[in-house]
Image (tube, rainbow, N blue to C red):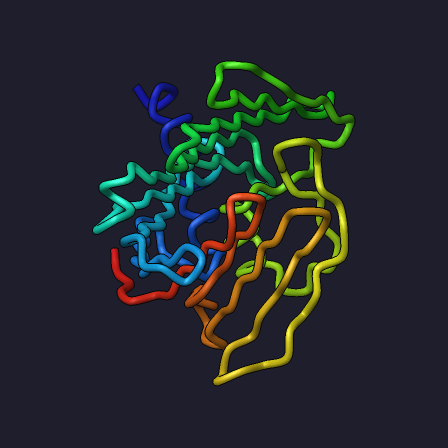
Length: 220
């Protein structure tokens, strides 16, 4: 009986250690107002949960008003390992008059990583990289909460991995910000300077425009 319980106990201890080693609580839920090109498009929900082997981050848009009528949508899910780098990631982006673009990424153990993009017309493109230390947009938000000293990153992106320098922005209203801008990719995140390093504002930018999220509620 004890021999059967031992793996479960070990796994529980591992998850507890993983939870205690980060500034956010398991089950954290953050709610944001989201704008696209300056227009309100709805509420954005961001969450973090402990799972076997690491963490799962989830993001989902609840569109309102014209964005809902037009069918705008955004949903993504990221799984990271004990190194907090992306193991698996998918994102569905639905744009009015264009359709849904789906991005799928996966890290291969000791053999790099790959991504596949399924375009609205059903065509597919993709890439393979020898690098397995990539961060998707969700993983980057949390990675910087844990490792604010990070300055170089390789990001999961549609046409190919995006590699570059992370810019530290001047403090503003008690917040500290970071920006990654490379080719047509823009990720900008602002954090409270509290123990939780709560992300209170972030921006995603691509050819689909500028999405800006502002925190309105936090909890579990």
